[in-house]
Length: 165
Image (tube, rainbow, N blue to C red; front, side, top):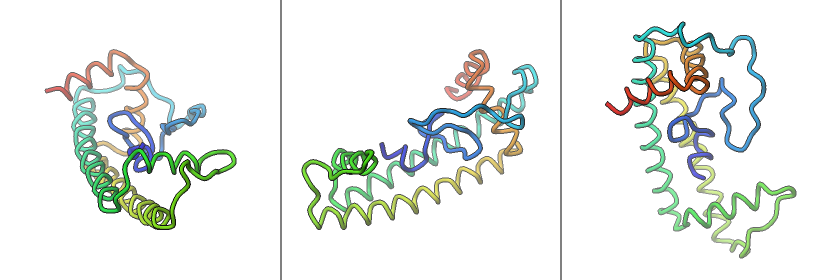
């Protein structure tokens, strides 16, 4: 739940990429010509290694963000379960009050948590963008490889093996 709120999706523990339709609980639109993937044969071994190294960095960034999110909840004395209940109630169509209803103190805590998580999400996205930028791959190429890894089981296995080493 928190990872979805922080970074919006997942390849590995909630990988965030604005250029990809990897949003939890959202249908994926058809890829545009710019983001359609080339055959996996068009990826060099060097690019696969750079991609996997970047994914490792992103995982580390996201683990740190998850720890910070947990600290935010703890500091506001709200459980993940209760936070999730409130979020689900507010996302309802139409939005409803969570059950049990929120106290005024809980409402204030929730609002502070949302603001802090918003800032944490922004910082996390910036760190991920920086990791991609310094990977040696262009952002568009990283996105293209990401898409190929999602679609090609052999390529995905190759990346997973690198990640495990």
